Length: 185
Image 1 (spheres, helix red, strand yellow):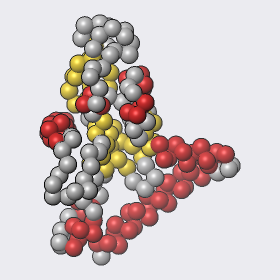
Image 2 (cartoon, helix red, strand yellow):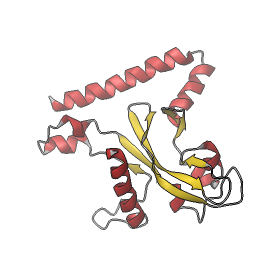
Image 3 (spheres, one colour):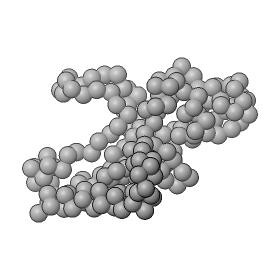
């Protein structure tokens, strides 16, 4: 439940500031991503807490901010209503992991169906520019980023196979871990 409270707080802050550009940093642009602090900056201020060094990236998939209303993909008649925040969904990327946070939606007036924010039919009902912004292919419990899926395709075309891609991912994740470890010492 701790994740749900954090998700609600983050979503509230994003909703308030989604189009505002921070005056402190003129290069800040609105984004779906929440990045952890860069380890070099933390370590330069003598903050040696390992939990700060291994925080994952978070992708906030709050697409209801970008459309007037969600039409139910199942019955095509009624509007979907927000039904609370979902627990984060873990996704494997090329160098590390990230989490996708989204809302649940419910068809109140029509078919009474429940949709998670990353449901394929719900994403497919969005405009193309939003569909293409979704960064992963999800399974029931986890997912793979679009970069990993692309690597799987390329690996298959060049006779690398899934075991070769697995070895590549293991090497990339180990390299990232060792780099962070070397930064601490």
